[in-house]
Length: 410
Ligand code: C6P
Image (cartoon, rainbow, N blue to C red; front, side):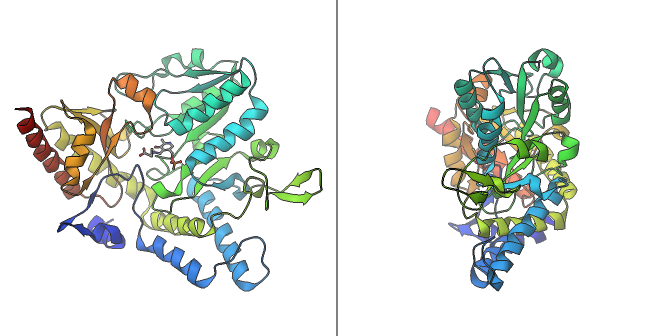
């Protein structure tokens, strides 16, 4: 992969603000989009815009074929054998909520336990809090080590006969930690619990294989993996999805309707009520083609190199604290950090003067921030289009920002 060649595919990365290029280091929030994805949206709207699953005319058939074709691409991308297991949602958040509402309200009751970790994004915490409060269930948390990895030593006492569901992020959006989902899934299955994994941060960066992962449900978002916003995926084991009631009622999710009742559609449409986000699903298909064209192993290798380089450069900055595992093989392409006496929001604002885009804040992980004893962090996150020069620009901009703060402090 020639990253400098590939940059030409990303129109936004050609843009300059105040005569300087944009150094985009916030792909964990949302990735940039290649022109192939943007073109797929234009092609749909200009060429075959029609509703899906309804029309018998040509452009309606074309739209349905393109939309359903992406379902097959998603299944292939994550190693799912059955397109009935691939449900399109609005985002990863909605995918997790679908499980919490539809599976959770059928299967979790008084005294049952739901096991999570303290590093979960609010999207993989709040839905379970709502479920637990409604059903009288309890939330339990796998312990963490000081380096930001999970402490699996006590797994047998955390996951017990009372556990109904375990839900763990595959990759932390703050620490970058890659969690051993298979090992946790095996522990969950040993007590008859269901395993959910939040792959919002891993699906864009790792070659996913849902069978090898061992998770029963997997959730992720298109917009973090070169695709448009407004599309998420829930992968679910067919037998579990078959047994679940629908999440939202309406058109397309039914087979037959009477005045007082309805019969549900087959999978996956049972969980896709109303007109779906046709254009953006088609755009997502173009994103998957783009990633496949490069190869996920290549994407991962590039990110390991960039992350290694970033860790090395940032270690040289005096007063800078980095969070997360030291070993790059165990972490994704992001680095969270703080600089002594500087609020990350102030830092991010100064970096913006150099068009260096990083995220600052709690990253939707309040409990983790509390555990790390910080109110916020700055975070630089990388993707296939980032270069060593981007890391250099980040390091130089941080040094300039430090000088500004040193002057203010005097
Ligand atoms: N994290 C970040 O900047 P949605 O918003 O549904 O596409 O993704 C939610 C989500 C779920 N799990 C993890 C681990 C995530 O990182 C995210 C989104 C973004 O870190 C926005 S807060």
